[in-house]
Image (cartoon, helix red, strand yellow):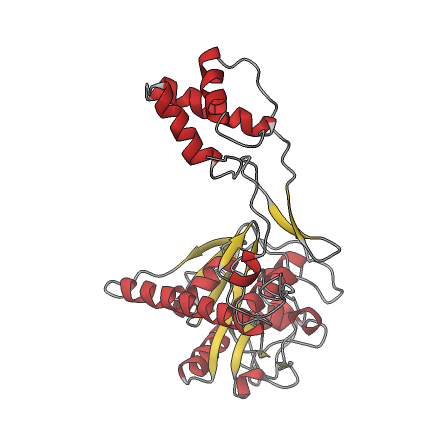
Length: 369
């Protein structure tokens, strides 16, 4: 019997075992959280499947109860009863021997899964098998959410290597409540399709969305509970080390004032030096002596010398009322504002001078008026 026949037709009968590549079992664990049971497995395959419990061929899984979250890649076979005396089956003539025990078929494994799932013992299941959509045993799977892989799956042989010669496509079927999660994870590996059920689609979608919202709310609650502070910064990453609420006093008090990227309590905020008003972005940084200074990485704007004479006259009139000389950057800002008002508002000089004094120079605390 050639390799293609062994892979595609009678793995259960031939005695050869074919295991699922790890990317598919990894995806199953990602959907279900973990795998409680693989009812048709062996110690070798379970090295990467990672099921908490397995049933081997020596411990017939069809005769046991199944519980929890199940992954299944059952032995593929059409099913056959044991030979009777003077057996004349064509199958026996072709293979050259008779069988003394029944060989379970695909229908036996699928029906067993349905029985355990409907009884509530199996809470969630993902199974992989050939996409024999015209076969009777495959009918129940058509009603389930399914993933059709991008290309054929080449299974793993008993030597740990991928077996070539697979001429059939496989399909992964899902049983359980987390349809959205199944679609999200397995959608990266193939095309996911869900059966259309008139009158139930809206309710199903609502249930899926509600489940997603509840899961996210639970995750956020756990993240918040794991924080070391009563007040957790909104931009803190999960697991990030969080310092005291107020960087000034180190106390876990209500943070009420934002200064740059830091949040201070009111008493500490009031002790900060005046905020520079040259238009650049500043952040407070504590010095070695405990004092705070405003620092910035933004370069100081270059002084422009091409302002119209009329603009410079207005700025000089405003500065005549001040006690200090402004920086080049602030002088540039005053010229820019005076020029803007001249061009857009058409104000007279006296009005612009008054506006500069009241709204820029006084705010910058260099005006004596």
